[in-house]
Length: 285
Image (cartoon, rainbow, N blue to C red; front, side, top):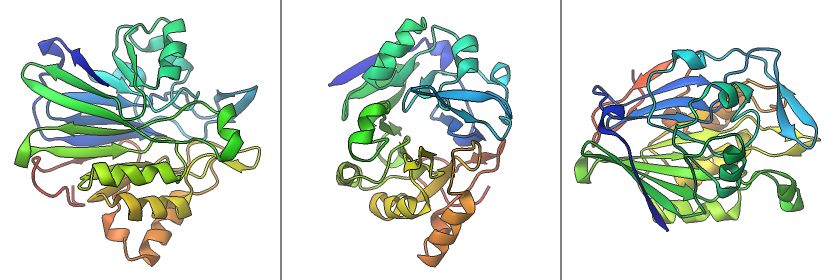
């Protein structure tokens, strides 16, 4: 199903190069084609806890590189799933209730209970076309699974996302994995999108009660080989006490596989400015 979302022209007037800014955990600012998208807003500070459901919690080990009140104007939030480390108590309290949020149907219902009435839930392969002032951005929901086997029923629904903007030779495509494991359903993504420019991979090897619920270095390498984006931006790094697979593990794995040149790590607070759409993203800047 295709949805449409028209934004006031004044909210999408940013000029300048496309860029990614890493705030921490899975939170990034994606500035592309005049749109500014905030992913998985997580702004609690070091030593604060977030809920993971069923009475479980995770403790943050880092501070966000940017406070929520210091964000630039954003056009929409892209939320892979409703967990405390992706939509925390700060986002619940401080994010404008009128902000459009693209997420899963399950998360849409939970957000509506909090007063976020402009959330849009997408089933797998549903898409939304966002327009503003002659600019357009298309977001398509992709498969994802947060836990192995029957454990997935105890975890929130999760989606990956493909973002596309621009036309023909001036287009750019970004894939955000969400907190998925390396599962068979992901094989449909490169069949539908064989030329992804940038892949934002959610890694960290999160374990809850000893069960892996997000990709570790090994699975991240498998996903890189499968999706084969031009450049991979790995997140999170080491933000929570439930992570078991640090960034260094992924860098070593890609180095052994002679794929390290595809990886563009971002330090917290770092902005990676991209060349104009239609040219290779590269690893400089």
